[in-house]
Length: 495
Ligand SMILES: Cc1cc2nc3c(=O)[nH]c(=O)nc-3n(C[C@H](O)[C@H](O)[C@H](O)COP(=O)(O)OP(=O)(O)OC[C@H]3O[C@@H](n4cnc5c(N)ncnc54)[C@H](O)[C@@H]3O)c2cc1C
Image (cartoon, rainbow, N blue to C red; front, top):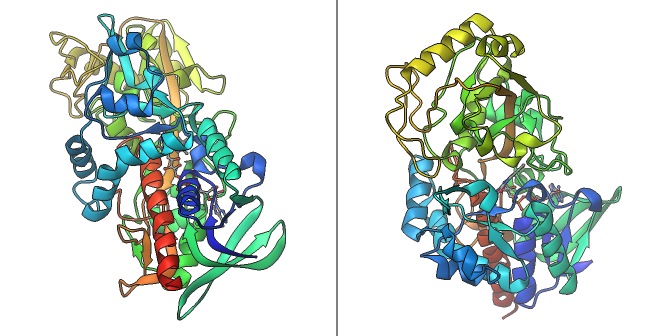
């Protein structure tokens, strides 16, 4: 086989890279480690929520032409300007995000989404998860407004259809093992294709094979103590292969190698994600709860910020608790606000009519301490401030060692509901060092000829935390750029 571009992976970043390279006139072959029925990487497990800058509903209509006048009049979409996106990336990563990569992400988000839409990917507003109806009108909050039709499954299906329609070959069950490279750069990939080891040659290679979150040994090595015990939220195939292959030919690592995106996840979930459940094991309505650990104590500010800005760092805090678990507790005042994922079959849930009964049912928790914590919390809630889930309402607690800053309601209306969670790791933040043109740099900071990268395996964008919906956008932006850069490098070499 000899082709212009080999793209390693078949998730969102890989498909964006393949589509953009093909659009530039290149022949493209994609290598997917998974069999076809498990293909699509983490992308397939997502809800398809994608963070994009927009100045108002006009911008949104360009990517969602199906929006009706009624829907528009009943919704406050607000804005999510490039400035807001920049501010979020800065604040959430503690101003560590690579400024050049961040600039690409933010300033190219709108155009990249329009490009995806023109290619045939459909989007819709995330009514169910990112907007509550207050006084007859939906209001979006937290900078996240759009999702792909059919969630992650829909997105992968749409991308695969686009790829096949455009003559892109997808080789399933074909695991990239190493890069074929010499002093002139990368020439191809050694693969295990349906069990047979082969060499595949190409003018350029784009790596888009995800992070190392599904590799417990690397998790323990880089993320540290107890990370081998975390559940993997998504695909079992992202074990760091692309990162290792690049490092082996001299690529430079970049970013937050001890950091990752990790969330509160069903305590008894299986080791890896299940496509049929998707992201349903997550439990992201905790801003309306209090969370208790085995000692019956609260251990974080559940209402510090909108879910989109805290969920990706709270998995780590849950992992640090004794036994690596916590219970989220709700009363009847807020159960109608719980996200769809609370209503799936596979939940570890208890209900009780009284708090005394509830604490006795919280498995592995000290009941006396739990009741004391709940009573102290109830006494500390400032009920003078009105509750409003659409804004950071400032309805907090007073006098507690660990404050709840927003959305604090007393727990006093049974039946009470409690859900057990542990840490679910989504993807790792450390990865390869790339230029804003998605060229992979070597340890002397020179581009490795013929090698590009996009998606989860790129380091430098996210540190400690992450604003929800940015993973898909980062993959799409840098995937598209990688395809364009591959085309440019081939035309330069051919000239
Ligand atoms: C449950 C869950 C929910 C999420 N929800 C959202 C959301 O709503 N919005 C959002 O923006 N992000 C979300 N994310 C994060 C998002 O999934 C990722 O940021 C994004 O999908 C990464 O895209 P990618 O193309 O880089 O990697 P992936 O989609 O994981 O693709 C990697 C590909 O590489 C393949 N591969 C791995 N190793 C090899 C190899 N050696 N050879 C060949 N192929 C290989 C894999 O099989 C896969 O096809 C979620 C993640 C999970 C797990």
